[in-house]
Every structure is written in structure tokens, then in C-alpha cells.
Image (cartoon, rainbow, N blue to C red; front, side, top):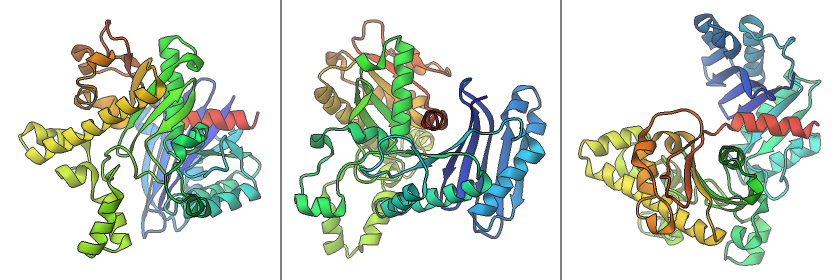
Length: 404
């Protein structure tokens, strides 16, 4: 069996899935959180048992002692041993790790060596909240699975095919080079998975398609994909640039930051917290969750309504820009939590684009369904799709490919 363990490690938590890659089947999933706190929390679900009808027996949730990532991985191993499936019967042939920032150094899934870990650590300057936590998870996983190859799959790797004109910022080139200031892009694992799933749904080779993929979740990004390769993406040197998000501002005039420092007396850290944690739809409409924002707008909340309008206006602007960059658009694809579940956001984001060959079918758009589906009219020249993302499966596939 081609079983891969996928690990997504954060500073105080880590998520995992055990995946049978060839069948695209999740055997188990879990979460250990509050690592380093007085009382941690662990959840584990034997997905195989749940599918067989043992839903109650398959789930485990408990308070645990997890002082560090090494202890957290032992909790995971104990959960597998006690609640299944057996890691002896379903031994992973690789462990795939999500790593946020690969800089310009990593453009494909990479087997983790000591040198790779040094590079991931060194790139922490570009992702101080993510890469150190990713590295802690790697080291804990290597101790738990010492005889198995570990593979880093980078969020930024898919976007390394962007041309220089797309990733270069117009600032002094020597300053930019010294401090590695350029567009890197994120959500690459999701964009890669969704673009290929969309091509499969359309029954066409991804190499002949020009797609705009809209990954709309609490974090959000757009990507222009030509022939299966990223040629433009909205997130930049950090995940802050681009679309309006749950708590992040997205695009903003850089002079606003200087203005807030000079006139409002905000420090650099305070501006950072403002743009990353107190902006987006939370800052505009008082709700970071799109479902809550839409409910508030439906009840007549003017601030929530404006937040929705700003959010979808920004999406529509990027669709237009990327259509110009691609020259032709075969399909626009919505994915992630908001993109997959909000008919209003999808409809408003593409409103007024009928002259560009984009027509959303209102009835199809409001249908509740799982799996990939078309929500454009039969007359639409551009297909509009909803395609669920599966970053864990994509990481597992890439890890398996890396180990041959």
C-alpha cells in the first residue's frame, strides 16, 4: 500500500492525516493542540473504522500533557496504537511535511536532510511565525519515524514558475536582493491540486488550459495558471498581500503604513498586528467568519454589507487582471471554505462579467453538492467551477513522488 503520513505543524499545534495515496483515501486524521500549555488537547479519528460503521468507537478526544512537539508526536503514536488503524499494518513509506516558506531555493518536493533543515531554518526570516514551527514538527516526526524518508512540500514551490516581471517589486534592486524582497506566493499546494482536479473534471489536459483559481478561505489568494504552471499570484513576499481576507487587509497603499506610524504613533509591531489580525472582513464588518458576516448583512448591517462589497470587488479586480495576463480564460475555479460554500460570494465576485464570457447560473450556483461541479450557464464561454481542495492529499502525492 502507498501510505503516507502528512504532517502540518504549527507553533502550538499539529494536524496529521494517514493517507492511502493510490485510492486517495484517508485512513486516520487527528489534531494535537495547546502544545506547551498546562493542558493540551488531542483528537484522533480512525476514518477506516468510521466508514465501516463504527463512528462512535472510531473517534477519540482527550486532555493530554504535551510540553513540546516531541511529546505531541508520542500522543499521536499512542492514539494510533489504541484506536487504530495499526501503523504496523499501514506503515507509512514517507512522511510529508507542509512547509510554508521555501524562498527561491525550493521549487519541488524535497527529501529532508540536515542541509535542507538548515535552509528551512535560515528562511525563517521570511516566515517567522511558520517555518520555525514547521521545523519543530519535522524534527519531532523524524524521531518518531526514524527509518522513513521525510519530504518537505513548500507552499511557495508551485509559484516558482512565475516570470521575473510577475515576482519582482519595483524597489531598489540592490536593497531587494540583499533582503530577498520579492513575491513568493502561497497556497501553492492547493492551487496545484485544484488546477489538476479542474482539468480532470473538464476532461482536458491541464497543459492546454488557462485557469484562474480563487482560493477563498480565512486566508485568500488568486492564481493565474497557464499550462499547469503558476504565472501570477496575489499573495506576495508574505501572505498579507492581495485579496481581502478574514483578518488580513490584502492590498493597501504602502504610504498608509507610514501615515499610521507618523500620525497615529503606531509602532511597526502595532501596524503589523493591525493589518494581519484586525483588518479584512473583521476590521470592516466585525466578523472574521464569512458565514457570520453574511448573516449580519442579511439582517441589514450596513458595515457588514460594505465588507462583502469590498471583498468581492477585490476578487473581481483580480479576475480581470489575470484574464488580461492570460490572454484567454478557459475556467474560473472557486475553492476553499468560502469559495466552496458561499454562493453569494461566488455570484458577487463575477457579477458584471457577462461581456467577458462569464455567466453564472443562479440555480446551479445555489445547489448544495459535494465534489467538483459546474456553476456557469450552458452559454457561458468561460466555465465557472467549484472544486474542493485537498492539500493533504496533494502533499501525500508529492511526498510519494519524491521518494519514487
